[in-house]
Length: 568
Image (cartoon, rainbow, N blue to C red; front, side, top):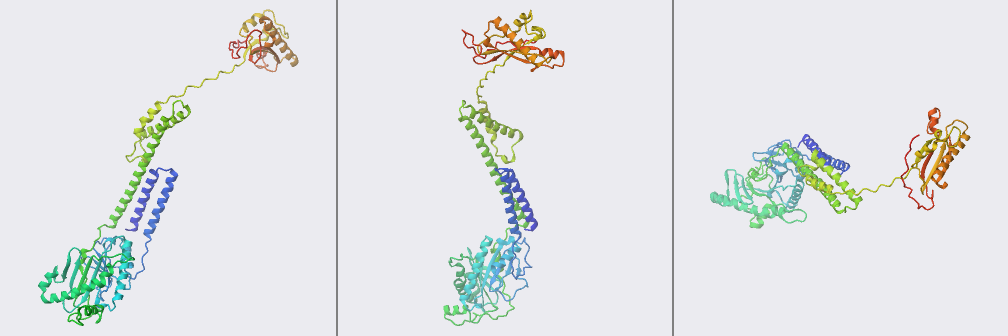
């Protein structure tokens, strides 16, 4: 996958993360933003880790590697390798697959890492073939130690890739009994088959029958090779070990050719043959020569048995990753929407149940509960009219079925009876009399004929217990203020005396005040204003224990039969 494709995936993941966190997550906006920042940080870290793959420092030229879209089997060849190679590059591509040579001084695991760094899509098509030529080894213990090291590296490669790396074990010897290359392969489920360059594969019985004595002699030697190989090679990979898992080979090969470069006159193989056959030397056991220019052919026929790639191109892998990210975002959105709808239904259902539990005569809590229901009804009505938001959407909204229960609960509410209104406090009732209609200028004796006006104006002024009759006199600002104050008091006393004598009202029912010019009701700059200021005011004021008339019980101070102001 190219860096451009990685950037596209990062942007795609960031966009979907923003949609899920800001549009669907149930917490508050601040929590959603914090979660989004954490997800974006994780995406950046993963991107950085993927883009900063460490290229292992290996002296391995892989310029001839097939393209990234190559899907044939790729086999890492290690162990006893031919002394000559057809190319300068360790890569040999044939019709049915690709062979990559791993030298003794190179680490198999490191070479595999370098190949996967260059071709990340080759994880599933990678295999390992271990070549063992018993005629090249003088010490069986050293060979076992070397094979254990390969077993450890293959197990580590399996852990890193996460896939089982198929193992091919190849045992090869040289012999003068044959003029061309002979292979026998043990394939699980198919038994042992014979492969020759000049004939089609077949069974051992058919090959011995048609080959006669030479074929039988070759088969005896091959059987010995099989026995030695199972004991000294295959057992190393199959024995139980607490530190390294067992690696079962996918294919076991035995090969025999006329020439084997690098063979030893005395080797672990010849020692084993002498010990098990009691013969020091048999004609044909050794190859005819050890020419270092001879190239041992590879068993290309096993390549179709090994796993191939899945056939995904980098672009297809990018689309698959994008689809996977979209699937995860969709699942997260569905879960968040479902949780949001669950919370809405649970909250509204709780509000209805709480309202039903409160008695109707518990007015305060009942009013609070119905106010909450009105808020719920407004929310549900808004969702019904304006559409469901994305955080409640995706076909999971069920709030519509709660609208009618909420409205029915609200309609069942009976408001509390109105509180009794307090009676208004009585206010003084004032009767205002024109002084010039009652008195001559500067005088405080009632004029003749004023009695009728007094009777008509003061018809509503009645003495009663609990009320005080206040008589106050007022003048304009003409003249001496002290004389005006005295005049106003004398005029008030004159009106008090007339009311006392005429209505036979005890003097304790009266209060007389003279204010002179201190309380004008109009301006004194005009004749009209001065006429209004010359007045006598009579008012009833509630006062406890006032105007106690002998023989009468105390009347309520709320008596409201006093007449209004009659004007002047």
